[in-house]
Image 1 (tube, rainbow, N blue to C red):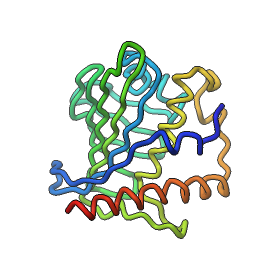
Image 2: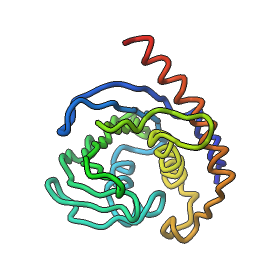
Image 3: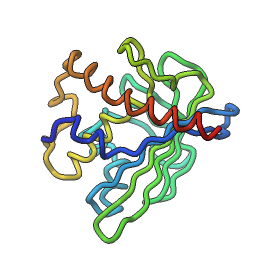
Length: 195
């Protein structure tokens, strides 16, 4: 399995604004190309027993208008689902009542490649990057799952839920978060210049 820092340069990052159900929102966008056909990537990000291989266990009623819940992370409604193209979720973290919106968009890149774009929009003030290591934006939190999605698509992860093979190392997570935060600071600065 590749180390997580190997995927840091593979992610394109941007910051924007958009309107969501809760009102005007600040949004972060992560974009990454995977060497896998679009159908494989779609199945990986929408099939419960595949999602838990690289992210978290998920339960729910998996259809547009249905509900989902990621164990210990977030829950909400499935707002839109256009197979192999778009998945839009209401995203309610356990410590908040207002809903964020997470959107996953896929675009084929040739026969065996796929661009995945993940946008997380929030009306709450949650995206400011703190390089001290005390508080990290949810933008940084999405980078680990994208790394492990890439490893899953390459076939190098254990064939069991991530809760059975992933070992949390706080010092390593803080180190990675600081590296990722430095990249998000650049994206935030670029956005500030264009406003």
